[in-house]
Length: 468
Ligand code: B12
Ligand code: SF4
Image (cartoon, rainbow, N blue to C red; front, side, top):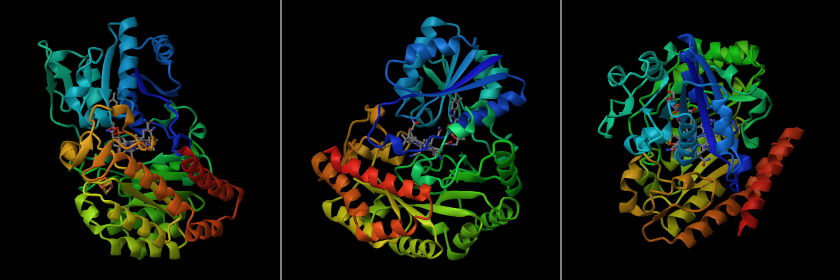
């Protein structure tokens, strides 16, 4: 059977678009590798196109003669995906269409509603997709597959229990050879030191309970790849794809100290010139872990700080405190990491005063970059379920559900849209124009790429300033 897997979004040129990662759609490469192992023919199409190109893409896809097409959807690009499915079904009504991804996991029944959707997958799609193909898309057999979403004859949506890959080491390595040459992808300029660079996972899920995050509702328990699996994947990236830098995309890279120390040992021993970065929670980072990571080539650590107000951290269900934030930042700075902190503005219960606390914290910490985002309630999160109790929110504006527009979609009670936008812009100025930030970043410039990274941070800030 010929299967095409698609990741598609219309590029709306948001003001920060140029600064984000451009990485292969890993979820699709995992699904593809399982399908390939079962002898199916699979292609991956990964496109970000200017408006007005959907029909052309549909023709390109159909010229490949697919029997079935799976498409991955985040909320932001859900309607782009549906427009593509509509165009495809109009031209080839017998094409079987399957949807999956973060948006489908958040709003399964609603996502299935359009006529151009035949099947969907709730949860992790590797084995579900393969079982569905093996069932020949027969409705009676398909209905028994865990994680399946489908339409009954009466038009209602049938939904099985969420699918999870329990033992993640059973997965074949992702079929990265099916996406464009890896050199054509690159992490954001602020997040890589050398090229070619790519993304990789060493675990899935998170034990956090952050109300704004799709990983945070206990739906995706933490599961680790073994150190052998991880080193084997790095080895493949190094030898087969020539990758010299890795962005570990795990939700919480250091969730198991023992395993991180083992991975660091392995990297140091077998790939001593590999450079890499990772993100983690501050309550799962200590000096010893950070030191081992640094010694093994990790140059950037990304930490979710979110707010300078303990009350807001509590409202967000973050489960960390400001003392942890301060000590981890200082350890990381001492060890020579470039530190990127993630911050949120406009959380439930937020006031001008709490935002000022965040500004003060941003200036106080020895961090190099701040990624400051307006809070976006995403489907499938606790925040989504309660957003209208905690503020003003329009749940139908999916295409705005990204952090790139700078336009709030959620306004906490007691604040206005105007206030939020002003404080959001001010946050960037406050951080990037502070003498401490400028000094710390200037100190890191040792190569042309470092200089480029620094100038890009400057350009990002200038763009913010000129925006209004
Ligand atoms: C890496 C990543 C990115 C990369 C994307 C790289 C890429 N090309 O895929 C970058 C940095 C570019 C990115 C950008 C954004 N991201 Co992002 N990202 C992630 C992250 C950390 C990992 C995604 C991943 O690869 N997971 C591992 C794979 C194995 O899981 P998966 O992708 O979910 O796929 C599995 C299932 O979902 C399912 N599945 C997925 N697709 C399909 C398709 C079919 C047909 C089937 C059957 C099944 C299926 O099966 C897969 C295998 O198990 C997730 C968080 C997370 N932990 O998942 C957020 C996440 C997906 N991102 C999110 C968001 C919001 C964004 C942005 C909108 C943020 C922004 N910049 O404003 C943008 C949107 C960009 C875009 N539209 O392309 C949200 C999405 C929530 C939502 N409802 O939409 C998430 C969940 C994080 C969160 N905040 O909770 N992201
Ligand atoms: S710690 Fe990070 S990944 Fe885990 S639930 Fe919180 S925000 Fe999500």
